[in-house]
Length: 254
Figure 1: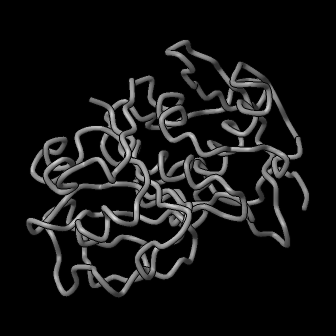
Figure 2 (figure 1 turned 90 degrees about the horizontal axis):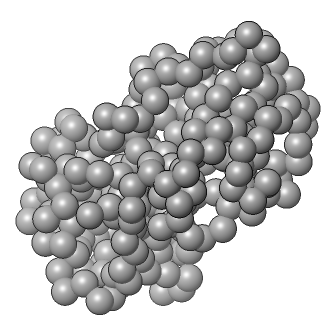
Figure 3 (figure 1 turned 45 degrees about the vertical axis):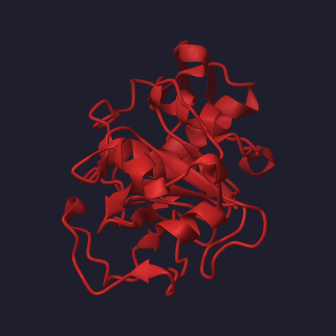
């Protein structure tokens, strides 16, 4: 793997929650949160331009204190491919830069830093969804255990407008005995609810197969015009009972 300036591509084409794709780093908490942030928050950065020295600046908010991370234009490539975060939009680079900045932020114990190249594989992204979402958004988050929620559909719907989450929300699965087609100990973006009993989720993994059981199929739902017949975008609507028995925690901002 080699750190190098991209030979093609641009920072942003069209901002979308569909863009961030998890690569080979164990950072599903971050990528699912990034997708959630882009999905429903107007404060999500629209575009970021490099400064005079060629560095991009990203802000993170540990304990609501702004920490600025500056990263160079260099990204890590392997055989002309981005092995870490990438975008579903061809030749779009913002998820890769955001991931680089957040990794650098964690590497120096969640403080400000300016960095060019580093061993990104050595960075631990952890499993604290509450903290990750607070770092990303500056909102205060709750993270109840899903098993304590009487009806996940109702609970999530109360935090939605017309079925769409009002604020960035993620959920992550148990470490064992999850419903068929779900990944254990893995974070998903919560997009909202539909059809009285389904939780709409997005798997951030690049190329991951979607569940085929316990899901709603055969229709386009009004929630952002999502087509549940598209089985290649990582988005699916999971039955609320399977959500309750498969997921460990839900992170949301009141």
